[in-house]
Each structure stands twice: as structure tokens, then as C-alpha cells.
Image (cartoon, rainbow, N blue to C red; front, side, top):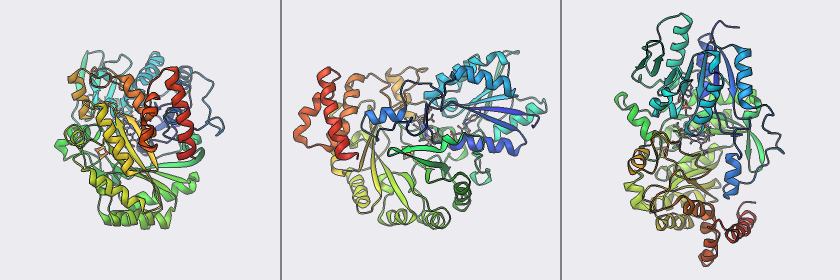
Amino acid sequence: MKDFKVLLINCNTMLDTLVTAGIGILAACLRDNDVDVKLFDTTFYRTADITGDEARAAALQVKKTDFKDLGIEPEAEDVFDAIRRVTAEYKPDLIGLSSIEVTQPLGFKLLEAIQDSGVPTIVGGPYATFAPEIVIKHPAVDMVCVGEGETPLTELCRKMRASENINGIANLWVKDKTAGKLYKNPVRPPISLDGLPDQDWSIYDERRFWKPMGGKISVTGTFEMNRGCPYTCTFCINSGFDKLYGEHGGYYREQDVDRLVDEMAQKKEQFNLVYVYLVAESFLTTTKARILRFGELFNEKVGLPFWVEARPESITPDKVGMLKDAGCEGISVGVESGNFDLRKNVLGREIKDETIVRAFDLLRDSDIRVSANNIVGFPYETREMIFDTIRLDRRLDPDGVMVSYFSPYKGCSLREVCELEGYVQDEQIAMDYRLGPSMDMPQMSADALRGLHRTFPLYVKFPEGEWDEIRQAESFTPEGNEAFRKYSERYVAEFMS
Ligand code: B12
Ligand code: SF4
């Protein structure tokens, strides 16, 4: 056992199995610096009443998955007893919590449960990055990592091990409880992705690679192809990263394709992967040469089905051809809203309807499965505007109709607008966008939005002549629920089997 030990906590939403690239990379960086790492993973503990996948199935987005049938069941042990037990057994020198906004409340409770241990704690991830002043205030938190963690975390471990002063480490906010001081250090330039080690997956339970898909399990690996995105849509965290890393020339970087495919090939063998999830938030927004190179190498060395996300204007005939040749099985295209003015003026996406329609036409001619990603519940968005999205989706006729609630997460520039309008408070945690709306707005109440959200796919797929009946299914009365139940059965039979 090495002489410096870090307990990393992956504070994840319940039974969302897909692994996150960030933790695997952090673990590898620590290991390369001779630090011992153990992972405490909340994924398989009972931390919620309903899983994200269950919520998605109830809103007609994905096929219903019975996790029990797939051999995935929450642990019997209480998550707080478990973290106390693991901390007492492992005796770490540092505890590093990785969380996002929706898991931050659980993260705080986990740190409170082990506060007596006296082990220093550091919190990282998107919420810590964009709400450091909220996170550092918590009595169980000693340090916060703003932005990328690879270099600051390893520097912290090196300094702690050597008993050196840790107050000046770039990216870190450090609380000195004895002196009653807070050190807020600036963010260092973004790291070169080519210099990073491969993800260390030895820290994970093998069930973390079991991703339910279409009612069965696929052993899936997550790989980071790009970090960030060249765009800055206001509802997305990349608008925040762009600002945070502005003085360093921005946040977007691309991973070397040769290196990435080599890592995939090696992990495919080691972990028996059958599916690949690529972290590339706008996969096709890059050079043709890069996609071509990826396709050739991926086919030759990996040859697994994969799924990508793309912006409509990046979808061109030659890029679709390249995707097909590379074995791409599914693509999610960001439609977001069907109202051009809202897209342009509120969301920062000046994309014409015709461009979106052309993209879907191109994809229809390939045999790649296409989903339209829609969002409802933006500030200023009215019922009529949501119907613009429904009408646009009807023109697009995608295989999958995905609809999420807009959640004003910290870091997204639209969060600031929502706070100014008083729709959300500074310290309010925005909800998981599969589960429900975070805001009750004058032009769109939370209840009205819930009703439109659950019926959205019905409006898209069923004839307009049935819209009056579908409208009944928007209401949460016994009659409304019964109408929704009947329509759901039809929808699942006709469009999801
Ligand atoms: C891939 C991805 C997923 C994957 C994988 C899960 C994951 N958490 O990575 C899947 C599809 C499962 C997923 C699901 C969800 N996601 Co997601 N996801 C992403 C995405 C696109 C990339 C994440 C990534 O791999 N980045 C690359 C790695 C290297 O960066 P990283 O994880 O942030 O880690 C770095 C730093 O944050 C820091 N760090 C992280 N942890 C720690 C810990 C310590 C101790 C330290 C020192 C540093 C540190 O160091 C890391 C290396 O530099 C981001 C968007 C984005 N650009 O961040 C959204 C994002 C993280 N997701 C988000 C959300 C909301 C969700 C869901 C709730 C959505 C949903 N309803 O399905 C679920 C929840 C699951 C969960 N608990 O994470 C939000 C979070 C918003 C927020 N402010 O908190 C983001 C930011 C997207 C957005 N809306 O803008 N997601
Ligand atoms: S929404 Fe998509 S295209 Fe826009 S900034 Fe985010 S990842 Fe990029």
C-alpha cells in the first residue's frame, strides 16, 4: 500500500450506470503520481425513489427497463453507513468528492456523515466549478476545485504528502479554518488532452459498465473524444466554461484520434465492451479529416456500435457517409426548440428551421437511428412556442422523440437570466432534467409544463385530429391520467417496440 491514500467519491444518480470519464482520468493521474486510490460509488445505493431511466420510460422516452431482471439491484446497506465503514477501513489522507448540481445535496450529506473522521475534503465537478462560493461555505468542505482537476489534485496530494503549504494551488479554493481565511486561486490554462493517461477503470465495480439499452444490457465504455464544445448555447454549461477559460483562449480541445482508438481497443479486450459512448458534445463539428481518420481506425481496431450527438448544421452528406462507414448506430440531434426567435434570442442558437429539416432528411436516407433532442420550459417560452417545437418534430419525423425539462444549472449563462427574473434562487438546486421542472414561471406554470412534457411525444406522433383528446392527457386528474395511460399503451405498441 502506498503512503498517501485518496478516497474518491463518485456521487452519482441512482443506477445511472454509464461511467464518467473524469473520475477514471483523475484516478489514473493519482496512480501515476504514486497515490493509492479507492472509489466509493453511490450508483448502487438506494438514494432516490425513482431512477432517471424509470422517469424517462414513464414519459415515453425510452423502453421500460426492469433493473432487477438485468441483475442490477440497489445495495441493502444504507449509503451513509457504507461511507462511514469505508472511510474507517481505508483511512484515507484525503477525500475527493465528485458531484454535479443534482447530486450535490447527497454529496454534502455524505461528507457530513464522515466529518468526524477529520480527513480533509475537496469537492470537484461542474457544480463546484460554477458555484464554488456555495460549496466552500459548507462546514464539511475544506477545498473546492474550480475547473479541471488533473493537475491541481495531483499537486495537492504531492504537497500534502510533503507537508508543504497548499494555499496557493491554482484552481483550488482552500479554507484555512484555523486562520479563518479563504484562499481563492486563479484557474490555470486548460490541460493538453494528449498528455493525459488512459482512464483507470480498475476502480469500478464491473456493473458500472452494464448499460441498459432497449430492454437489455450492453457492456458500454465511455471515452472522451473532445473536452467542451466550440459553441456557447446559453442553456448549456459550455457557455460557462467558455467564460471561465476565456483568458486562456477557451475550453474546447480535441483528443488525438490515434491515441483514443488505441485506448478503446485495449479496453474493449480487457472489459469485453460491446458498445461505445463517446463524450463529444457536438461530434461532427470538426474537420472531415478527423472524422475520416476516426472512422478508419475505429473500424480497423474496435469495430463496435457507437452513438453520437450532433448539431443540425454539422450534418452534411459526406459526414453522414463517414459515420455510416464507421459503424455509427445512433445519432441524437439537438433540435431544442422549434421557435426560431427563441432559439436565436434566448438560446444563442441561430439555426434556421430549414437547416434542421435538411439534417433530418439526410439522416433518414442512412440506416442510422435518429433521435430529436427537444427541451421544454425555457424562460419566456409559451405554450404556443412549445407547439412550434412539436410541429417542427412532426416535420422531422425522427425515430426517437426525446424531451427534457430545461434545468437552469449553474454555469449555463441562462441560469443568470433565470436568477435575475426570480424564477430560481441563487442556492436552489436545479432538478435532474428527466424528473421535473425547476421553475414556476408566469407564462408557464410547473404543472402545465409537466402535462405538456408527458404528452409531447403523443402530439408529435399521433394525427393532429386527436390533439383535443391528447390535451385531456395533459391534466393530472383521474380522467387525465386514464387518458394518458391509454395513449401511452398505444404509443409504446406503435413506436417503441
Ligand atoms: C458525459 C456526460 C454525461 C454521461 C456520463 C456521466 C458524467 N457525469 O460524466 C451521462 C450520459 C451518464 C450523463 C448523465 C447525466 N448528466 Co451529464 N454530462 C456529460 C458531459 C457531456 C461530459 C462530462 C465529462 O465527461 N466531461 C469530461 C470530464 C473530464 O470532466 P468532468 O467530469 O467535469 O471532470 C473534471 C472536472 O470537473 C474535475 N472534477 C470532477 N470531479 C472531481 C473531483 C475532485 C475531487 C476534483 C479535485 C476534481 C474533479 O476534474 C475532472 C477532470 O478535469 C457534461 C457536459 C460537460 N461539458 O461537462 C454533462 C453534464 C455533466 N451532465 C449534466 C447532467 C445534469 C446530467 C444528468 C443529471 C442528466 C440527465 N438527466 O440524464 C445525468 C446525471 C448523471 C450523473 N450523476 O452524472 C450537467 C451537469 C450540470 C451541473 N452544473 O451540475 C452537465 C454539465 C451538462 C449540462 N447540462 O450542461 N452525463
Ligand atoms: S448545447 Fe451542444 S452545441 Fe450548444 S454549447 Fe452545448 S454541447 Fe455545444
